Image (cartoon, rainbow, N blue to C red; front, top):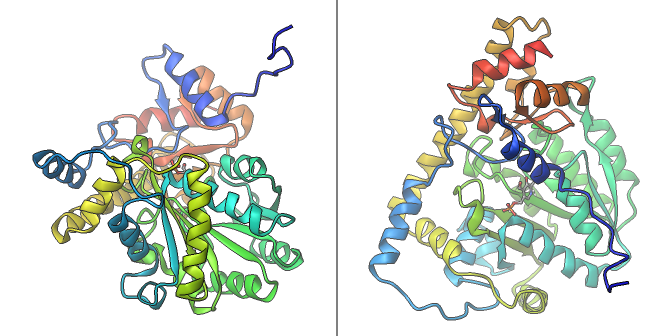
Length: 397
Ligand code: PLP
């Protein structure tokens, strides 16, 4: 008998487990469309020019590595506020946003979840059906009961918006609702601007707590365009949470750069909220790491580098859209009879392909094409060299 005799083997992470399987696959034609990572047309993880320029400047004047403040680099937090709410927006200029640097978007979500558990210990959390796998696990580990609101309509190949609204309207006051601000993961289907207005109205009428997860700002239509939904919640006079991730938009996955912003009623209230967020951070990991936050702050704080970032982010966005079209055309050319044009109506890095679990397993085992069992494929991992093979493989299953 050891201390750990009763410890059970946990299931593998569904996506990272797929990665392990991919790495072990000896098929030379294998293609990994499982994990949510953007690769360039050569199948390489990009190191953005704006990031390289910022790092070069940082190397030229090396700085010592003392502890950061608990809430992170001040210039970074200010840059996040500017991106999420607009630098000249009323919430930012009036000082009623509390923003803390987080360990990736996941870290931002977890700081918010832990804070909410103190604030609303008995609230339920609603996530979309389906959602990013980690939403359920993260809020459950934070101590919440997690349920879903209706979202994906497989038959319609789109959003079951009536169902979504009905779920929100049926939720008890104080329920925490996790919403994907743009580029819904995993389905690739976002709701329209007019539908967002209805969601905002339901959140307000039913006294729900909105937690917007913004992991793909800039991958939909543009940085400002993808942030429009934030303005709708502000205009409705709501207090809410926004988690930010720069993993994808700066291709800084491993640097773990993200944030949590909480919109409060007043500057004084934001100071109180910030003091509590700092306790959550202090008791978890004390303070965030420097490098990734410093790079993002340097890029966003320099007009030239910021313009370069917007250009590079735009190139990623445009390449993904081109791949969607190529996928639709390629599937048709490969003999797929069904109309697959829905793929171009999806947005962001993913496509819910509509393929069954059996088809996804066959794709993996017979062709080395890896997507999740739910049929999700990462369009951002397609390129001019692997697209024909992927189309031919899909056509065969
Ligand atoms: N939220 C969503 C919807 C995501 O898809 C992801 C990453 O895949 C995250 C949050 C987490 O981002 P990060 O890697 O910055 O923690």
